[in-house]
Image 1 (cartoon, rainbow, N blue to C red):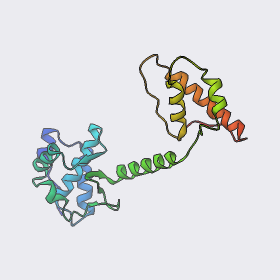
Image 2 (image 1 turned 90 degrees about the vertical axis):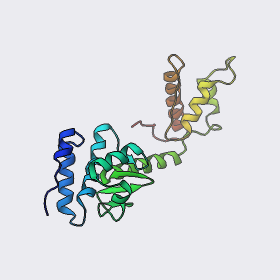
Image 3 (image 1 turned 120 degrees about the horizontal axis):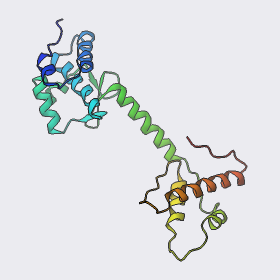
Image 4 (image 1 turned 30 degrees about the vertical axis):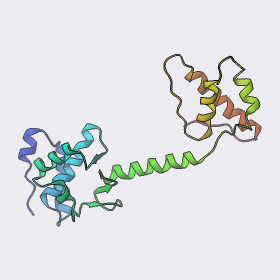
Length: 196
């Protein structure tokens, strides 16, 4: 099997040397893969340089780049492609309309799984921390107390996001949330909360 000729792609800078090396490696390892299919893998790899872990296959700019670099429409290159699967058993993974290098697909799946597990875990229960809330957030004229609500909402699950402009009390709210979590741990005779 001959090596893939990338001279035109090297001249216009579309592919990096690592992308070309990947396509050449895949060309040697997968005898049934066409040159164009290997070039497609190189293009997906090249997207990493632009900060993209995957490529939405419905994006026309990418489809045009595929046509120009690979010499075939994207849809044709995805048909019967030995380099592509939906389950991570190949170098490319097509998942929900996005094309990934397998390694990055696996990382994204692992992160999504981890986040999903954390979202299932409940931390604060409003009724159990009522006294602590009253101590940490003394009554004010503001109704509702947005910092207290932010604290409760962020503390409900093992993942929370508190946003706001400068001077709105984000840091104060986080400190009070940590105090609330530690107090709840003390009340339940549990170990202190650790942050990762």
